Length: 433
Ligand SMILES: NC(=O)c1ccc[n+]([C@@H]2O[C@H](COP(=O)([O-])OP(=O)(O)OC[C@H]3O[C@@H](n4cnc5c(N)ncnc54)[C@H](O)[C@@H]3O)[C@@H](O)[C@H]2O)c1
Ligand SMILES: N[C@@H](CCO)C(=O)O
Ligand code: NA
Image (cartoon, rainbow, N blue to C red; front, top):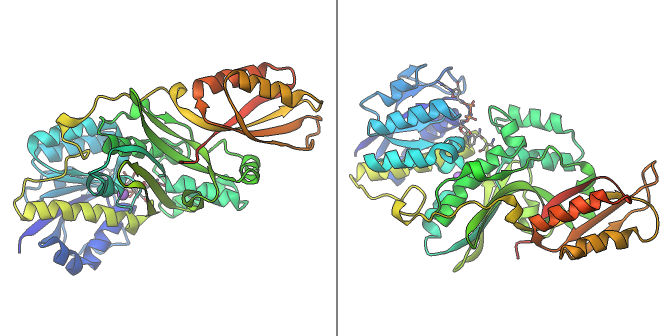
């Protein structure tokens, strides 16, 4: 039986998990892969006290892995943009296949990396980078190959979903973030989780694999969860909605929507009930309809599950001497469409609006008239008794779908009304029908 030799770069949360699962399930994985998968070398800045290295060579320099002639597959689990890019390009240059969990790397440098890999005829696999252990890249590139995919939407940051879920239960933002970091869910820089950057990395990759367009991370619209208040969570609930942090990619005439933001979703939908560190990705295909992929979006062994699935894909190809492989983004490079990401003003969405209004008759009529001048229909309104010391009343409404440009103009006019005090809070809403 052929030996496929793997070199692991980075022995942190995911590196440690990958090492341990590969060892624990070695014979089961071997039976499935049809070859032996041996860890030939490990490199990381620090040792990891959760693993037993035995006689596997260890060093602090990750380039030792890339330069080891006995290594077939380089597994990049260090994270970050620059060193990871250098490492992966060097591995490709040396003719090695690459498995990575690094969505930041793929979203930002993927076009360059895939082009280099294509030239060398090596595989670059990144399943663990998107929705952790959920095999969603496999599903999109292979399971849904027959479909024209029209939209993809998902909860794709475990840390953010964990924070929103716990805030809903009354816990403090900073406490929950600290716990997510201790559990190994958060990125090295947790603002990537909280401000939606990590979700935008993943959405960029999902959109490219789903629609067959080049990676365009720099054009994604990104809004985090740091401004979501318990007040809005409660009032969304009164309207029958939950607030989830979603990534939404939608194919439109002339371009694609690519946006990450807090979103109201009807609470009876499955995706509204995905809590904690769990992720869920909805994919709409013209033949299959809606499918949903659900499971652990972060964590050491859950993520290792996806890293190892990619290692086995590579090992099967290497051990069978096959050059056949799934194209990087699921489409042959020549079949990629040059569709641009649309500016956020061009997206279509429903909206939750909250404002403070003067407590006198006719104010609601004024608000409705501004909205209707912009073609915005109101779905429902909650006008609360005044609970504010300044005598203003909170007005909360849900609108039908409208183009964001219209909504921006309407909000500017509402904010200019003497009857409205302060900024209008706006949260986008989706019902996926
Ligand atoms: N933690 C998760 O749940 C999770 C899930 C999916 C994907 N990821 C991704 O996996 C990657 C690794 O994440 P992690 O949570 O395991 O991070 P981590 O910080 O726990 O581990 C990274 C390891 O790499 C080492 N390292 C970093 N730069 C290095 C360098 N230049 N030279 C040598 N060693 C270096 C660090 O010392 C550390 O041991 C990241 O790209 C992350 O986005 C993480
Ligand atoms: N920080 C990421 C890790 C998984 O990609 C998350 O919380 O989802
Ligand atoms: Na995945």
